[in-house]
Image (cartoon, rainbow, N blue to C red; front, side, top):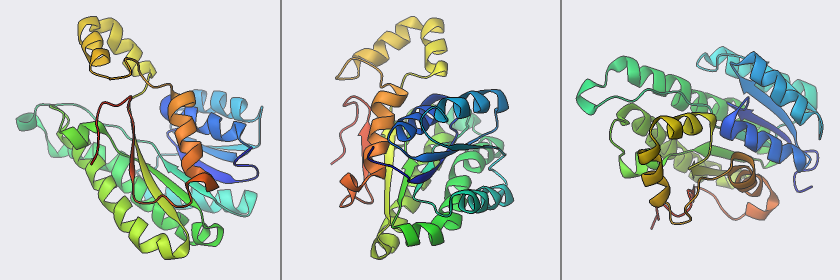
Length: 249
């Protein structure tokens, strides 16, 4: 119970990696606010969380800053504090570089970068009180420059930039700010593996550990570590949870 009675917000947590993180943290004793736009999946995730601890559900569009402020305020009103902020939500569409439009940049930055920035600003006063933990999400697509991912890679690298700035500024407040860059087995990846089995096998063979990460067991447990006191002397870092695919120096 490394996170017993901690309070956390996890965005994009109705399914996939976010749900895995929310569940892993709940099993360690944290109260979790699930934030998503999918009400059906959100309710399922909440029922799962409530088997272990007390959760909240917010079906909100976090591209709107007023919704971000509302969520943070409601969590604090309910639980009286905030210890953990996980900015996982992000939507994007792929396109070749020369076909990438401002609309694709607006989608990626509007659902990923700006909500991350706004949640960090809104949560800062409470995280300062609790000496809390922020976990943001990077991507190998940005670090390696994956083709057709210009808008996604740009937003993810922008998130890495503000994470490092916050780590430097907020260290004096006892707030740890880190990043996870994952490769994980999600519903989208499973669907793609059936549509393009040869490409899927090629991807697996490029992972030194020869498998995808599991949302709860691999990504979730790493997030639990970063949210716990075990990581108190780690900040401003990008943690590659990708089976060894990318090695940062």
